[in-house]
Length: 421
Image 1 (cartoon, one colour):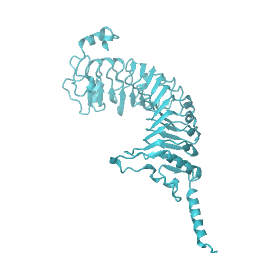
Image 2 (image 1 turned 180 degrees about the vertical axis):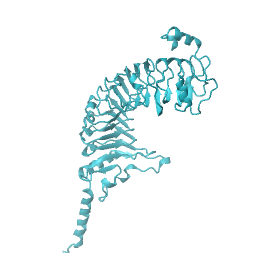
Image 3 (image 1 turned 90 degrees about the vertical axis):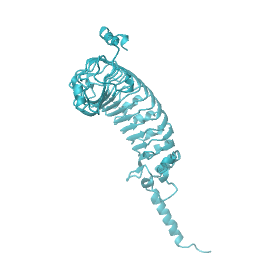
Image 4 (image 1 turned 30 degrees about the vertical axis):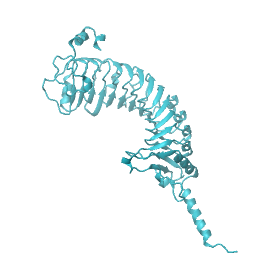
């Protein structure tokens, strides 16, 4: 019987060693999980205009024994010490990329050392796997701008190391679990543009810096107290109501958007401070006036929008430093302080909308010119001869320079008359 050539065992031995070397660079559990994750997702075909866009999964090759997923799979980052996947980024995130389709596999939970899970924009559907709550090392979950449905798994709100949770721009429903308060490390919570309902939790993590729950179906009043370290707060376009309580202690707040709700009552005096560079409270039922306070210093890029409310009284100088100021569609009376005109003339204030109030004077001579970059609208007030025309007014201001006289006289006779509406 002929003997096999001596070199064959050496060939098989070399192949076995090289294969084992490649596979050993990633833990076999993670290798198997990545295969299941890929099987549940697919690249969305690019349009003809973007045919050159790279396909995300083109580098996920499971057929070659020499491929190391830790170094060659797009979106996969591994720990050098344990060969376990620590960061999983699904999708390219490039402008013009159509993203991924399919669903999120529960196999993601097999990546036991994962600390970042990111899904870029696409058309991924289905629920968020509840198994993610077993990933105790997770610090970042960002699954944005897809078509995820169902409720947010309650277990996610008990992950002890979670720093950032962004599930915005999906179709998630249900309530925000009260257990969110247990996320002691949470700094960023973004659940905007979903279909969430019910009241917002009464308690949030004390370390929270950024909270965005805008564009949902949330209802009820503000919590009695918000996290003191908040810098960004947006609850716009919901169904919330009640007074603006719980905001007085937010000394670090720089961005506030509570627009398009049903909040009522006066605006807290504490909000009239220059450190809040964006204050968007338009389209509510707020009443009272603009508090007297030290005028804001000039703040580049600052925006204050208090339009479409029920603010009354004379305008104070508190907001002269804002770059963009919307006070239109209220019930403000009296004359406009000259400091506002000076701010516009100096180029500090670029937009000043005061239309649809009951203002009786604007300290600018008829025919005087303002900077070309300025947009000032004072139409439909109680000025017999408005110093400005309609050129800088939006189309929604209408085509009448002044209010009918009977409306202005009715204001003085009965400040709460229905004829003023």
